[in-house]
Image (tube, rainbow, N blue to C red; front, side, top):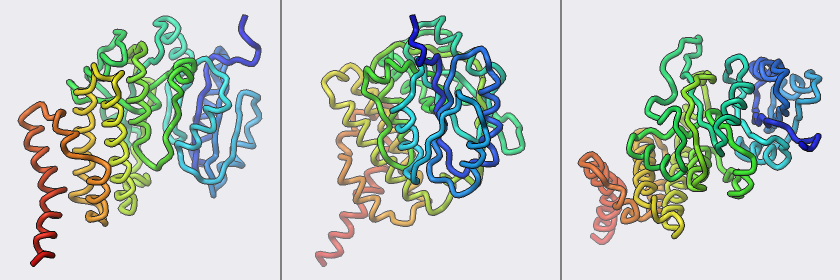
Length: 327
């Protein structure tokens, strides 16, 4: 018999200055009367009317936490520490969902009896126009192990790491002792890689139940945030390489290194065109990551050209500087 405190689903929503959009999302969730849920909203130090909006909603299924600004990943960890759901869903406060969102996700999760279900969604403009689906190359209607999924994503060069696509069994999170690493960006990618390296059962549903609203004013597009994103990519690449070196992941070592090489492309894109402190970032990359570690991930002519470009950008300038100093 189910404990009376246990819920079917815990919905976790970190928020920061989301007063304009948060109410609509919460009411959409609470309108689903058929699902035994809890909605945990963590206000991460908002300075607008977000907390007042939350306090105005009187529903015992809504649980609110308030903390000083520590970042979105710390907010999610705070919710994970108290959640009671059999399944966990992560949402963002400024996006939108379809009707019967939770009921349909729960039905799929129970029918497939897996550890993680990955759904689909739409990229939507700020005016509401549907642009394209979030992913197109997943093995819909199939169950894969985490290792099989990693190999597939690397082969297809499509890694659907978005948290709001996932529905994760709480027992699987606990079994893998999984939490979000502190930081400001890209820890959702690491969370998903770690989910997959747990090698549980994953199911892929091409149900487009989430609308990811593109926001040009988002912090990730701010000029002063590019260096922070670049540092986060360095952390991410180093962590993936560390996972690849663990003996239990020997079977997917090459795939993990190839994925680290893909993330290195993203780092280099920021480094070459957008960051303010390339010298500092170059040194941080070299301190954390050996290019020799990435070499096993080279798998195509395109990878060869990229790897040479990476060497040129991150190594040759330093050598030239040393030569100039010696003169």
